[in-house]
Length: 146
Image (tube, rainbow, N blue to C red; front, side, top):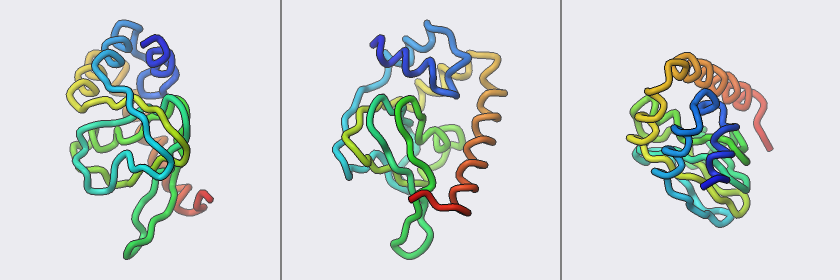
């Protein structure tokens, strides 16, 4: 669990949380492994979880047409993916696929919300995080990641 807490410490959305809350988050989450090509979540899946990548790489895609996708992001160690669905309370709008063998921490919606709501700095941090993510993905749509 020490590895998970250390990674969570460097995850932008959780950086204002104290070690106790990070331990609670790690303890109540599941460590999961994905093989290259395996889907972590797909567009339309229920948004009841997020992942923190512990090792490996994950490609995140948006649908751009009939059966076509465009890569908007590559997530690696310490990156959080799938959180937008939890925050917005909606199904996943993107698809995440393991590019390499990947280990991730799967965080359930209720745990995620309970942990972040207890930190006074979290509201501002969430707004900043969302703004940064939207800006990053908009830029990726204009200049696709290869």
